[in-house]
Structure formats: C-alpha cells, structure tokens
Amino acid sequence: MNEGSEPTAITIIDACKTYAAGASAVRSVSLEVHPGEYFVLLGPSGSGKSTLLRLVAGLEVLDSGKVLFDSQDVTDAAPRDRDVAMVFQNYALYPHISVAENIAFGLRRRGTAKGLRKARVQEVASSLGIAHLLQKRPSQLSGGERQRVALGRAIARLPRAFLMDEPLSNLDATLRTEMRGLLGQLHQDLGTTTVYVTHDQTEAMTLGTRIGLMRNGELIQIGSPEALFERPQNLFVATFIGTPRINIFPGELQAGRVRFADCSVDVLNLPSDVSAGSNRVYVGIRPSDLNVATPAHDPSLPRLTVQVKLREYLGTSYLVYFVPKPLNRSTSLMPVDVSHSAEGYDESLRFCADVTATVSIESGGESDFVVDPHRLYVFDEKGDLIAGPASSHSRTALAGVSESSS
Ligand SMILES: Nc1ncnc2c1ncn2[C@@H]1O[C@H](COP(=O)(O)OP(=O)(O)OP(=O)(O)O)[C@@H](O)[C@H]1O
Ligand SMILES: [Mg+2]
Image (cartoon, rainbow, N blue to C red; front, side, top):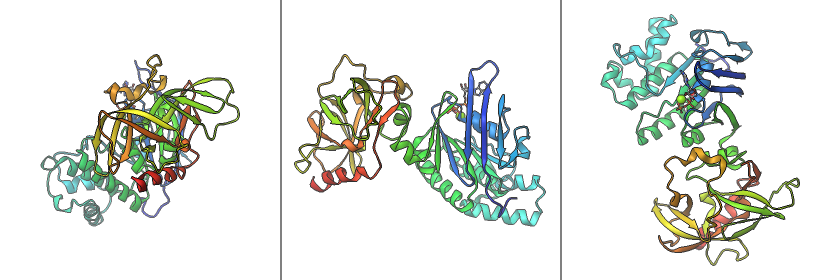
C-alpha cells in the first residue's frame, strides 16, 4: 500500500500503437500527468483514448515509446507490477464472491493480514455508502451499486494510480451525476494520480484538473477545462468543448473587421501577422455569449438578426434555436473541421443561444442578439484559432446588462 507516500507522476514519451490489421490507434503521443492530478482523456469514439490508457496500464504493448512512473521506466513491466487500479465501464466484478470479498480481492492478493483487510473493507465501503451491501453477491446489486463496488476494489489497496475507462457510461443520467460527485470527492480525499477516459465533455470539464483532447490517435490540445473552453486551438476543440455547441458562422475578415450573417464586428486581440487582405474565416460565438438586445444595451454594439425556430424552456434560461437572417446560401455552412459533431445534427437547429428566461422571445419571430466583441472566436480557413476572448472576465460586463434590464 502507498498510504502516506507521494502521488506518482506518469510520463508518456512518444507512444505509438498500431493494432494488427488496423490503422494507427495512438500516434506519437507524449504527455506528462502530474502527481496527484485528475487527468481526463477526452475525444470522439475511436480516437485512441482506451488504447492510450491500456498502454499506461500495461494491457497493451507499445510499438515504440516509453511509459514512466516517476523516474521508473515501466514500459516493459507486467500490469500487476505497475501497481495501478483500473475501473471499467462494465464493472468486471467477480460474480461468485461477495461484495466484501470483491473489495478485499487486491489486498488478499498482496498478502495483507486478515484483520487489516477487514478494517480496510469496512472503511472503504462506508466511504462509498455500500457498507450495508457487503454480504451480497454482485448479481443482487443495481448498476450504480456495482460501480461503487468496482471503485471500492480499486481504492482499497491504495494503488499508485487509478486508470478509469468510462466508468459511468452504463449508469442513467441521475446516477452518473451523483457518481461524478463521488469520484471528485474521492480524488479530493485520496489525492491519487488519476487518468480518466470519457467522451462526455461535461464529465471531462467537471472532473478534470486538465484535459487532453484526442482525435485520430493524436493529442490535439492539453489544458485546463477553462483553457480549452476559452482558448481552443482550433475548430475541433471549440466545437467539442461546451454545451450547447459553439455557433460557427462562415465569414470574411478584412482590415481587422469580420463580417458574418448580417453582422460586422471589429476583431479584438487580432495578431499583427494576420494578412491585411480579405480572408475567409469562421466566426465562433458561444450560445451563452448571445444576449437578446434590449434598450439598455449600448446601441453601438453589433447586432445579429435572427429568425427564432424553436425555444426550449430550462427553468432559469431558454435555449433559443435560430437561423441568422440573411443567410448566404451559397456559402457552405459546415466548416471543414467539425465533422465529428455532425452526428444526428438537425440543420435547422444548428444555431443556438442560451438566454435568461426573463426575456421575452417567441418561436417563429424575429429577434436581435447583441454580439459582444470580447467574446468572439475567429478561426482561419484551416480551422486554426486566430483571435479569441482575452479572458473569461470579459464575459460578465455585457451579460450583466441584459439581465438587470430585462
Ligand atoms: N483490439 C483491437 N484490435 C484492432 N483494432 C482496435 C482494437 N482496439 C481498438 N482498435 C482500433 O483502434 C482505434 C482506437 O480505439 P480506442 O478503443 O482506443 O478508441 P476510443 O477513443 O477508446 O473509442 P471509444 O470512445 O469508442 O471507446 C479505433 O480505430 C479502433 O477501431
Ligand atoms: Mg474506449
């Protein structure tokens, strides 16, 4: 057991993995997971998250590259010698033994004395709220209870690191939220280095100290949840992080001004090396950054005229789905790099604003949104970010106006 010892750093150097008869699953990934960090691997299906996690666990063998735990090279170490605990989506409990024996399994294998084992199982079960289930068999438990047992088994022996692969995806939405809280709490209490795989960006944003966003076997961007939200390197990151999805308008950038739909806005924070000529760009505005125009708004602020298609009431806010008014039909609206988010996408519901429920806005009507120049993202034709919000503080100034005045 590692009780009282310092948390472990996990270093991945230039990891490559290609399955037989398959394309590259992990391509030259380098990554440092800091001691005690909750690191989330996020990405669409097939992006290589599980493969990377299994390489760290030793369940897959690297084609090339290295894995270090602190300064120890574990590249060739067997899984059981790495002292990590895995938690999977499908629980993987032993069906023929009790919950208590499942939780004690790792301790028994490591030769922990019986008395100590019993005490530890009690302690772990209490912290997970499953002390009353210790004598049951896994088949007698609900999905949420089973996943707690699987977590219990993982934490009982205080491993060097937790490696979790979509542990919550078999649970219903309510349980998932509850278990998310429990995972966060556990990490706060134990401080064990954790690598957590998910394709759910809400899970990633709420749990992660940092997130590594993957696509096609590559790490596209690594950063804090805030950094990925505020400073996405490209359209893929911008459209993957944030719900509802960021609105993307095709536009044109000329002399520091960007035109899109019926809107024209001076771009702030534009780097000096952007070519002065006319450039095709994509303009991104987060749904939470669109505010319904009111008389209290500065009339000089740019406005976006839209046709409201649908309004969803969420209690404190409305999700307003809209189409920008004079939409240039000849421009392709779906940019090159956001194809992953096209799953099940209803074309007419592509644009969305998240507005306070105190404003009046009707389906079928026309509406004006105020566009905050401080909250604009501008991407070049390849999808790389050219200019974005300077900081998250800029958001409050304008949002405050519409809330207090409406
Ligand atoms: N055992 C295997 N044999 C052959 N190809 C595999 C194997 N496991 C994964 N792959 C392939 O490797 C790529 C990465 O798979 P991986 O399971 O790591 O993705 P993932 O990001 O975890 O996806 P998901 O979100 O669907 O779990 C995919 O193209 C997948 O088809
Ligand atoms: Mg997977």
